[in-house]
Image (cartoon, rainbow, N blue to C red; front, side, top):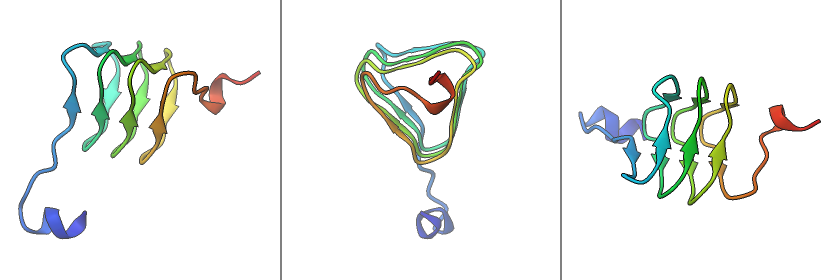
Length: 80
């Protein structure tokens, strides 16, 4: 990735039109949020993540960079 950035190219953050992202959520650069994914209030998504179809990142959760999440995934901060 450093090679691409070194060329002055920008790798975009992509958010599908059917995804729901709270205005208070933070989405890192180069992250992809696909169809019907939900990123709820105050969630923080790191750089280069992939949030797959219909996954839900609940409020106040933090995903480090380069994380892939899918349906039924439970972030460690949510485990009891």
